[in-house]
Picture 1: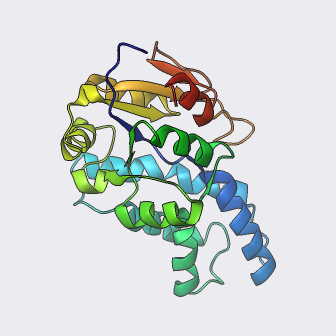
Picture 2: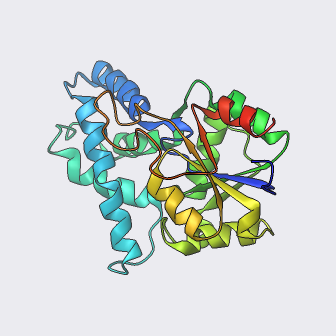
Length: 237
């Protein structure tokens, strides 16, 4: 670690920094109470998130023009509306539900860990989330980013190299001066291939109690941390 000359930490956000699944379940259960619905919001959250990568792939593959994540989430929500009994909601209510991604809650260690890391490093998002989504989430959750970067500024979804390389370029840094922080091994693999240093953060319940993926690092990343507070300690913050 001491040989690395890192100036910026770039973060995956969904799952690494915020707990998207529990946040959707929490708001969904409130909607059940308000509207007299009887929806299994854990099942819904998993189904909605399950449409995420296929939607991104159609953009990455050039099968459709660029569309930001808010737009892709809304299309996926429309697909799931009848299946999960959301037909009682009008378009305004569906729009509000779609913006639940703007109101995700941080993991318990997130804010403290980021504030400590900010003492020493530039903190930037490197997320597939669009800028408005990331800004609103940061204000909602108290996330102390220095800058919002990632897919929308790069006009490219991870894990394509452009998402990482444009992020470093916009920071005025070489990729070797950046460290990608993520709970997902494939994200770190792509960042490493672009020259970034890498930090794996354990989030073993991102997909609920039965999670089977990303339970452990699959490579020898530059850092492996229990959470962001642990990562701050490892990086001397």
